Image 1: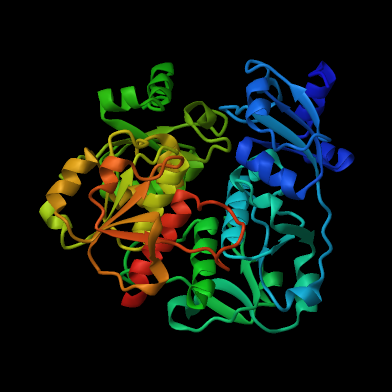
Image 2: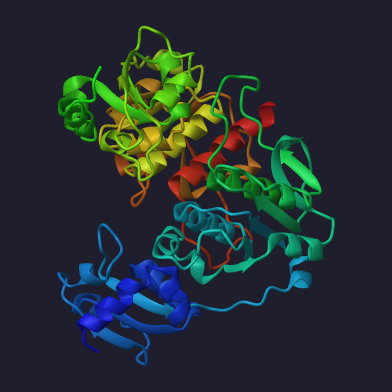
Length: 252
Length: 252
């Protein structure tokens, strides 16, 4: 395969959700993320330097390859510091089976909009064995280049679903639906179950009223020392990390 | 004060560390961060819309003010979505007193380079009552616009020091110096003291060998379930959050 102007144009178009949806494709960059994706997803083609292909003989022979020079890679990269390999993959389609999720711990994102936050949350989910993330339709798209890169390969292992959250939570039924609220219980003081849904809210607005209605257990991450003049909140990915850590820490 | 070309040029120059060092000034944007800074730092001047000044009568009279139109603000903003107020502040100078730090819990950053990560870590420190962050000289600069914005106002309350880390750790003496390593102890299984230094390493390389020599207690955040194919690591700010949470969770 040759790195033609058309190929460059096609890859660059995949920065936009519209073209990802039209083609069913997305872009991942760098050795770690490309190799993780190859293990679990359908790879359309890989563009890399000859040196990269030479040092990665494990790449299956049936994957279409395109050799590029180091100076050509930036033409197909979304990174400030382009790496030696860019892969184009087919977006997987996952079934959202609410019944299955009742036996697991999952995250629900009520319009987390920053791609860096979403990517970081996918990486946290992967670390703590949370296989499914259910996002509201207005959340950031998990296959945008920034999310894929921030996930550091975790996007290849975690199922990210997009759906109407109230509908999903309604089916989940009124048990073990967690969210953080100022008036919530101190998360450090209570026992937490192995299964359920943890809802994380929007960066600015938190959890929306219509989603909050489904929360059965309100939690709060207290600052230390308490009643001190401090930051008003934690970043949503940071809060997700602390909460997931609390849900898992007793299980080792 | 008038929003002259010279003022615009001066503010824009403050994106560069060189000019911040030369002038001793830095920029903060948005109501929350500007108002937090006004409480604790010396403000050189504020640029805002008339509406903003009208709705913030608490801004002290002796602070120099510059009224700008909504369309002028982007000229002095580093944000993609400029807000209604931009403040220029004098960088505070803090004494690093190692003896004082022996009675507190502090963070040490061994060349955390991403401004977003540093800002997020400052916000985490603020949340968990960690007053001092000691950075290696090659770490990101805490007064760069990206760090200030990511700290969400916490930069006004947390003392960020820059020094030679081995020298600092040597003075700190061989006790309660924590770092995360693959061969470390499960952080969830051990008791943690109220004082000490938590070292966080560089995004790609982790903790450097010369700093690792000073670590007295090696910790590890285990993934769940263990021995599973997963992400190789957590983002440094996420790891800092989980570790700080663990150090504080027993104290409420």
